[in-house]
Every structure is written in C-alpha cells, then in structure tokens.
Amino acid sequence: MKTFLRALGRIAFVALLFVLASIIYSTWRGYIRLYFRVDGQVLINGQKTSGYLHANTDKTILLLTRTDDSRPETYLVSLGPTKTIIDCGEWHPLRFLPLPVGHANPPCSAFTIDRAKVHDPPTTASATAGRNFIEFSTTSGKKVRAQW
Image 1 (cartoon, rainbow, N blue to C red):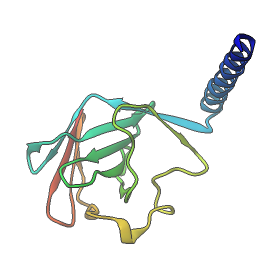
Image 2: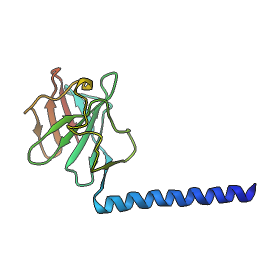
Image 3: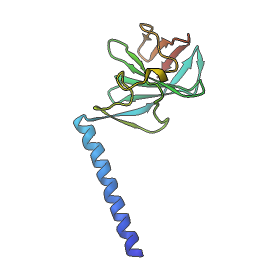
Image 4: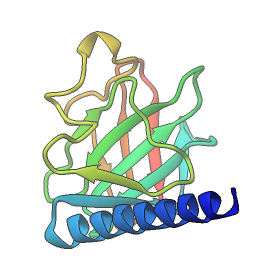
C-alpha cells in the first residue's frame, strides 16, 4: 500500500509539472495571456462597490466585474487608443485567481456572447478615460467607473 501511494504521488507530481510547463510554454509563445487581479475599485453612480478588476500583463485590456446586482457582470475594456467596451454576458472571472485566456477561444468576445443573456450592456461612445480610470454608462443609466 505504501509503494502504491508513493507511485501515485509521483504520478501526480509529474502531471502537475507537465501542466505548469504547458502553461509557461503557451504563455511564452503567446498562445495564452494571463490576467491578474488589479488593485483598484469599482464605483457605480459614485458609490464604491465590492467589484473587482483583472488586467493582462501588458495593461492593454481590463476585465471590470461589477457586483452591485444579484449576479456579477463583467465588461471587457480595451485600454488602447479607442476605448472599446464589450459586455461578457453570464461569464465572469473568479475574484482572486489569475485567469489564463487562450487566444483561439477567449471567454469574452463579441463572437461568443449570447446577446439574450446580457443584463446591462454599455452604451456606445460613452467611455471617458484618464491615466488611472475609465468611466462609462450602461443602458439602465448607471455610471460605472473603474479606478486603479
């Protein structure tokens, strides 16, 4: 029994090393982008909420998750020259964990979102951005602001 458990432990260790090496290789080659939790806050109509932020390592894309409603809602915000905001529908990242996202099938893109499941989408051309914040309005009239 002892040798069986040792062998099982070694197999689990090798499998874990394989998974970690795969993630490192995919990240290095650009197949996966990692999104990390950003220290910041989410304000809805000027009131601080328990929302949270994730950003990619280049700080060009922000995942803003607001938690002021009964279910969380996430927006993908492009922080490039044109501020594009996409509602992610029912999908939202876990609060504290880094998020690996593959380039072939991202969980939040205009092609993978079911428009029927979008709760409060952003209005077009409503984004205002500064050095460390972005603010936009939603169709329900709420002002969403992320500060980092």
